[in-house]
Length: 205
Image 1 (cartoon, helix red, strand yellow):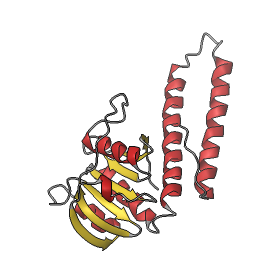
Image 2 (cartoon, rainbow, N blue to C red):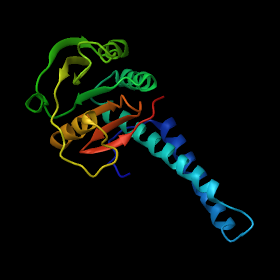
Image 3 (cartoon, rainbow, N blue to C red):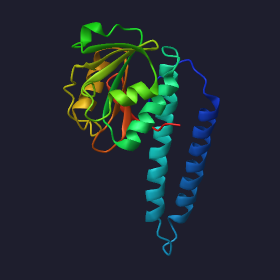
Image 4 (tube, rainbow, N blue to C red):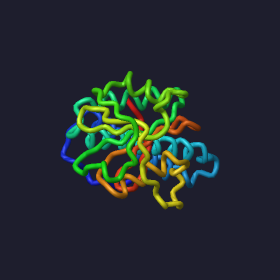
């Protein structure tokens, strides 16, 4: 995963990611040493390496997500908490965070909200059966501007992480603007964010 790093500093998270990478390198060296030992099957170790790599990728994505959001929204940790809760409950969600590019020209506008960003309000918006839960929430600075917005869909088909309409909408908007779009799958509960037309898995603190 290659992402151009923004100017930010989340040192504790960065330190953990570095330690995890070094631990994986040590494990790979050990595997390399054991591969010639015919009495020792290493297949189980490869499965562990795969799981550890996915965890590191997800941790790195979370690090970059916080970097991308922090200059534009003070309450970005509320977004992390919201995504964590919705992911655990498997409540589908789509949250577009405006950065430098105005998003007004790319949205089919929904219903005005005009309230400060809080995780409780966001969770209530995406509660199943809520009249606002379909469509995307638009966040500008520290305000929930509106809900039930319709985002442009990507035409990309060859990405196995794009599994439904929410993911296609998240990718579609970031192909046209510098927005960051958070998405939670209703089917799997997996959380991702889209940036520059790419989806990245997210873990939350």
